[in-house]
Image (cartoon, rainbow, N blue to C red; front, side, top):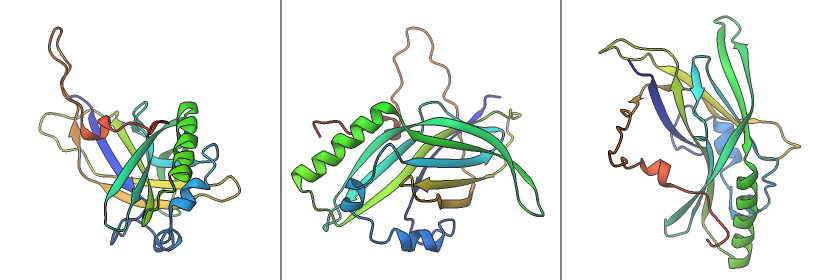
Length: 209
């Protein structure tokens, strides 16, 4: 049986979501365009904690900036992340868990795109009512499953650091993932390419936006 793929988009501010710590919601309650323009993209870091048998898919992780005006209209901008370190650690005082911690940063091209994005915000003097930062990613589970078998849920945690002189703060705390999406069947030769998902169609902002 083919591996299971999990496609996940996680937001910093999720109203009523028990996996987002209250201190994170409080910290980001007034997150704005000015906060976005003050970020040094070279300093942005994300950490994703997964079971050791869960592997981040290459080129699948992104930082997503969402800007919303006072009328509720929003724009979304996506910047690729790259893994710079993966280590296996043990968590828990009583119930020990062996997990994998991956540290990610913006890719070189994404840093350039982010700088142009910030300049565009300043030049256009775009005034939005709210800004948000999200992490999107897809994972492969290396474990194989028998036909008809349902994969067991697993826990996911995400941490974020916006500045080099700040500590990581918890974005998502041990969220239980229970929804799975099977791998698409391999494309046969001479067959037309299948449409990608909406998440795949999103592209990082460029200097013309």
